[in-house]
Image (spheres, rainbow, N blue to C red):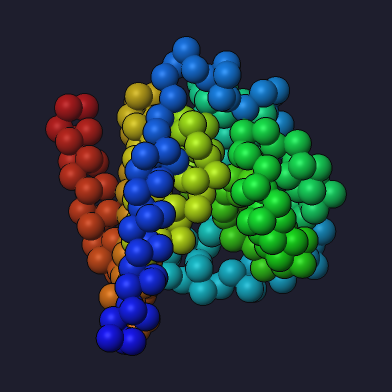
Length: 273
């Protein structure tokens, strides 16, 4: 009976969280509701000054990510013009839902994160105080991402951090920001991620938004690139749930699947050329 009760408590918590998020956090806004629930203000993009020794160290630290995703531009710590233009174009097309999103390009900026945490009215204050403050303290402040950082989106400050020089990766992270921008209860949606497998849902949504945008803009070369990088990246999340070192196995499956999709698209493009 005691073992059953020990099982019942976390199970009940998961069920409760799932119900709460299903009933509230996953609720999508209608276009005419953006003014009331949307992020206020204009998007900003800030780039860190190039510091060769720090960027070199960041490249070394990111070697495993480069290897598992088979792309040397992953965590390159230098975001060049093509990626920056892709970011600006995506923001211009989605400014209603992205609002005052901030994009940090290879920049360590806790001085920006704390004020944004305080003033981010898109997420209710209990989530910012009890969860967001710890995220900003440990991830955005103590963890010097200029060296150790990977690409990610922080919903509590509505900020995208980018260290890879790959446009489709930037679109994926902005897809997270757009996904949260379309939710009414963003704090609950962020909490949803603690439930096992919930991150697979959010990561797939962000990836799907990246592909949808790329296809709408008819960017064939970028779609081919996205298959080769976003599919294995997603595979690391899936594989990590099942076996030790599963992220590697998942990435391998993602590489096979993604390259098959890329090859199929290339064949179709050549057939119609």
